[in-house]
Image (cartoon, rainbow, N blue to C red; front, side, top):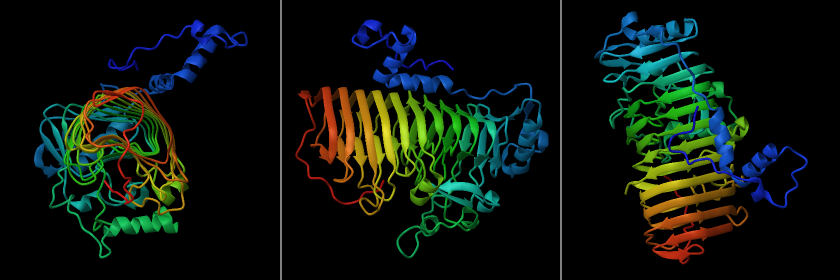
Length: 484
């Protein structure tokens, strides 16, 4: 796949720029490339992008729900028709496409198989039933970074290769405050089933004994490929999701391209790759009730048990409107996150809390490293432009030290924010190596919050029309834990 048309041009590096380095041991071309990669982390991003390849499906093998009794009237249950169409496409030589066209198809969960593309044609809609019973028997899934057997995601694949959800049509989750978004709490003030699930994980209960039936208050994800290879999600519009919209888990080679997400329910994150390797998210639009993009790797005991970091993630050319964070790492990151590259994005809304956000604490304890951000335009955000928060949720209440190493932010322009930086580490776990380069913050109303940070550097940074050589001090660090 070629570079995105929005990607900056490759930098030219001559051998003369490497004066003083012994070159005789290796061919000149190899040495130049290796030195350039060491100097420019974006060479690593280009290598990641070059090896991400979306799956391709034979257009001749075409199946429709109508071939198996499906009716596009918005009333008829098409669950069986979709199941048969998917099976037929998977059994076809080289795989096939399930093409959804002709109106509104009401259905229960759609489980994709290897070598199947689910294509929703323009002017067509897949609408998912509000009947909770339709999403059982239980499947292996995750809720906020914890594995369990329970409610099926709306579009789900487990252990498959070459799966896709494409088309210019609509995926309608059909969630409202009267069904999926209803918010029930237990007697202790926390949500009953989510709290119980987290307790099971901390106690080490096997996953096959963490079973939640149709009466559960745990919401399903919208699209969840689980332990899959070669995944493509492209061009669709997603509305009214119960919770997280696109949630690949332990997947490899994932492309999310030109997707539009507009849904403002609780926990309505836009795209949350969790414990994945090699992910490209590009040219998408996010207007969400929670984080627009949130990169994750498992929560607390479960994250440490599975021990699969999320790594090699590229976010390029995306637009973020409402949400808690534009690009977020956390908070379920106990297995760590590394090698994240964010470029050419626009973030702008008074209802967008933070542009670049990191959430961690002493209960999670994950290591975040090697994050690079460039060419970001922020019209306005409600809070800090950049937040690294160890006081999130449980804060210091835990035995697992969070770690943060290396964030570069280059050529970020911010029109309006509360403050530029809100960086809160721990005395025993400082945040390390933060660099702001060629950034312009037009209006920041409040002083920065910087606590327990080592290696914070400014190069050609302007704040409120004046050169800035460091953070604007003066604010008192908030000690209380925070959610959101």
